[in-house]
Image (cartoon, rainbow, N blue to C red; front, side, top):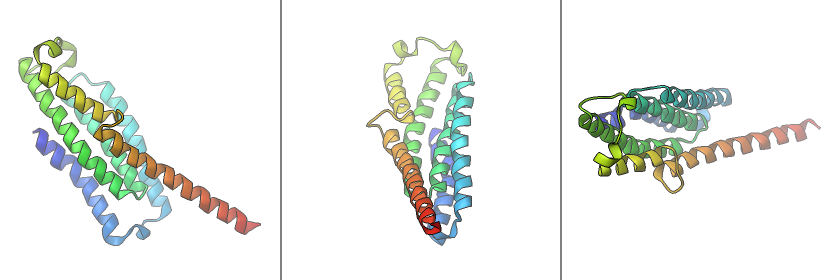
Length: 178
């Protein structure tokens, strides 16, 4: 379940959008469309993250956090940073698969209980699972020097570059109007 989720469900849409961008060229995407895509991705990332915080089911928490990560990838596509989107897609697949495998082990150990408020003492009973879950969570929240940090940083650099280029274009237009 974890590998199927990480490898197909999230990957299909982002991969298809990256392939379309590279197939027809980034020049074919008007600025307005790119801005709309980037804003939709950013809003999705924030709203889905908030939705994840309101869940009680461990698998739903992970599913909504996946939607949040998908928002990052879509934002990268709107910024015409397909490389950053694919990099985050790849790193996300690994740390989210690890999280879902850990969640499965925890659910099994808790006699198929999925409510996070009814779980307790997991670190004492499942040391290795807890350690891998913590490592994957660190990558998910982009702790420095984790894979999630580097892939999200690539997306944020693309955002900074897009704003820098827009400022240059605006300055050139202002200069031309004088």
